[in-house]
Length: 55
Image 1 (cartoon, one colour):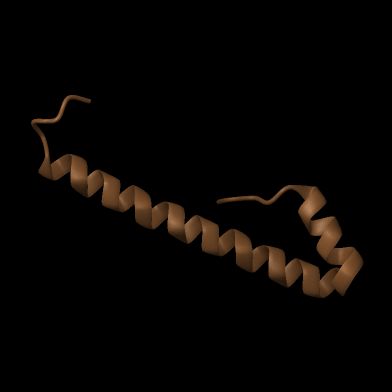
Image 2 (cartoon, rainbow, N blue to C red; image 1 turned 30 degrees about the vertical axis):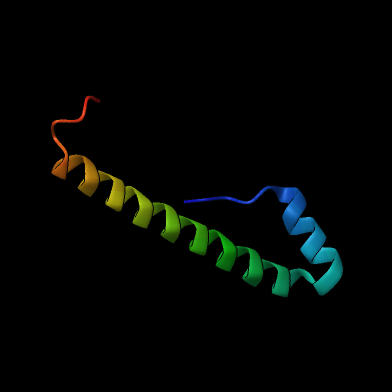
């Protein structure tokens, strides 16, 4: 799972409060993780279809 730096959380916390910061940071982390998993799945598929490529 992707984890944002503590400094990012603290900026959000200072501007919008603790609970809202927690929700926003968690949502950002989940979005990043989802994108990473999607891209990794695509990369694995590409490697599987192009077995002639050197690794």
